[in-house]
Amino acid sequence: MYPQSTWHKSAKTKTVNKHNLVWCKNYIMWGGWTLVVQSIDGINYELQQPFNMNFVSKYGRVFKVFDKQDSGCICFGVQTKDERLFVKFAGARPVRYKGTQENAILGLRAASKLIRIWKIAIFQWTDAECMGKQYNSRFKFFELSIGDRIHILEDILAFHKFVSEQGYVAIDFYDGSIMFDFSNKRMIICDIDYYTKMPYINSVGRMPGSSRFMSPEEFEKGSVIDEVSNVFLMGATAFALLGDATDRTLQKWHADKALFSVAEKAVSKDRTKRYQSIDELTVAWAYARNTR
Image (tube, rainbow, N blue to C red; front, top):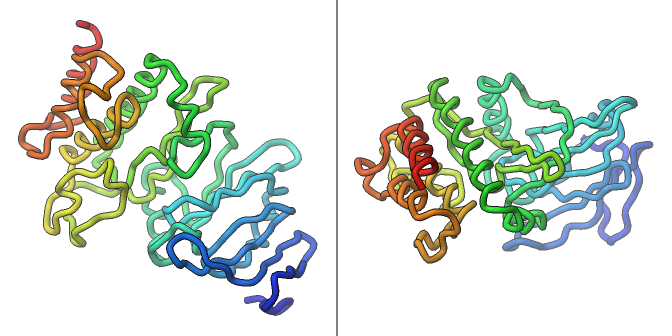
């Protein structure tokens, strides 16, 4: 794959083409993983193993790289002559990804059924910032007013109501999937690669995702993962935005008590005690909002 260059045993790097693709010696980080550093258009990024990213240059000049997502995709901000683009690619091995390259590609292809993309996804660039724990911008979310955070949650609910109406279930949605354009006050959802058709049977036990957002059935092999599971997910999202993702108590809740009661029911461990659809949850939430 790399006829123009060889590995270096020292920390020195070597430029291999006009786009300044470089890599350096292995180093250890994040739980003993062996990583390599590459660079494109002067911007460094990290992978678990080398991958030739020269193809990205055909879309324009790279000005930002997102290499910390755990979906198996690596993403680039690219400047063309006329506009900025967001290029999402599955096939390399990003530093936080624990799966196979093949599964990352399949995940991105599966997402195409909802947003019509394939192995490389091209989007218009946004200046939105991510709520994920791996990004410094997370703290800006908690500086927003409660009203703004409620609006973000309601946009997320509306999107997942649409997902359910299309016959899909959300898997691996978490705060790292939430982006917000602070200038224009616009919410954007990213990384829906694992969303899949309902009903879905948990065939592995512990499924992909953040435990802070996962329903009990996502840990139980043989369980059905469906819209009721996503009700739990939406309740967990409410706590992440308006309370505490790990301490779901009224003492940690920052919105009205009526809204807390709705979120609390949504995250019931007993799925029969939850709202039985996203629509039912949305109606209860709206009622609580209007009767406070």
